[in-house]
Length: 372
Image (cartoon, rainbow, N blue to C red; front, side):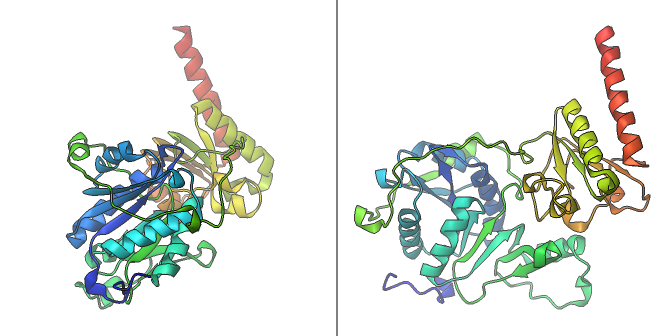
């Protein structure tokens, strides 16, 4: 640790930083999401938003990051950083943080981010909140968030509205509770954030042209590595891309009486609409669907153009993961199901009867259209 670095010297730290992840020369979607969210946090703190980008010949990506709100991008380039290694990336990021002292440091909760962030936090002697789904600095904004996302009586509680600590909210106790964590005694406050949770802003060409690209000096040699990447091999594995889907058909506890039949109906409707199949947490916990299908705060946060919920009651965690969908259609036997509170169209009925009717209606409409 640098001699002049003290993580407890809160006043010495300033600005919001985002680790901008790239793989084989391609920026990860999470990087743009975090830059967009970081812009909001930086505005609340009245500081600059900075990205840090590591790799080899990656400086051209800096403008794209600026387009989403970054004021500065620190680009650290070296052939030794071409492929991700825990040793190399940790050393460079830790050295940069010790030099520039950001008060907030955000990572995507990807495989790389989950490996890198805790190593950096340990070396910097600061706290890390993993797998966050919501971030706040402004206390008033945090209170508004609690009003909609919790059962707390926030109006009867005392709040320090001058508090500048980063409030990091994440699922706890297997997703049954949401916990907000702060790091009041050390800096930077560090967090990993789930991919897809934060909304990516719009690309702004003017901001892209205005971003300041900085190439700081840093030291990195072969001696800093305990491992060496010999090659990168991509394994073919078919997984459901919920985050990138425009149409999602999800099934829930309502398929319990005929799991196989319910999944088949959901998949048929999804295929017919050109979408993908999702599921509520119970379908994953029960082993009916694999984890890459899960929608909700403990799964994937999605914003498709169309979201169809079949037999999903609509828990707080599930609604938080899909409430920003363009159009929500819900089918449930229980007319009091919470999912109807946010649905644009609601059908009270048995999904095993309603879904085949929807499928046949869509097929009939298409056949009629083709016949014209």
